[in-house]
Amino acid sequence: MNNKHLFSLCVLAGALLSAGPSHAEEHHTYLSDFSSKANQGFFNTTTGWIEIPKNIVNISHDQNIFVGFTWGLLRGTAHAVSRTVIGVGELITSPIPTDDYISPPYVWERFSEDTRYFGVHYPGFWTTYGPLDDGDDKDD
Image 1 (cartoon, rainbow, N blue to C red):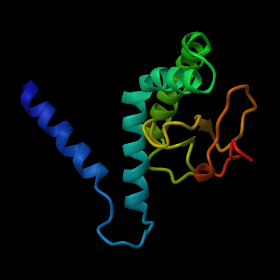
Image 2 (image 1 turned 90 degrees about the vertical axis):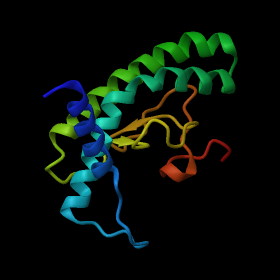
Image 3 (image 1 turned 180 degrees about the vertical axis):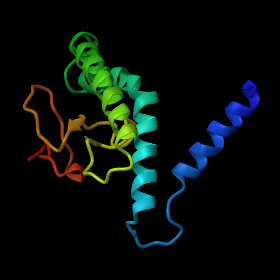
């Protein structure tokens, strides 16, 4: 199989896995849960590195640019590795129905909120959980 066919197969598989239900009501079936978890696993594995600029930008916005480029880089690297490992775990366990491992499910969703794992609020300085994430709102 040449590279063009392999690339086309990957694009087609990604498009099929990312297609959501066509009706407005959210209906959970085994196939939709499997495809959603496989889709999250694929994108978290391939885009985990986006946690680095995300954390630099968010911490720079909350504090200052020096803190953003030091603490944000360290924290972003830890989150990037964690998101990538979680993505591999989601891919491996996609046939098994489980709760979400990571929140927000994709790195680009709710970009200003910090990443949480297994629904646990980890204490930390410069941590922002938004109201859409069942977290503590920063302004409260």
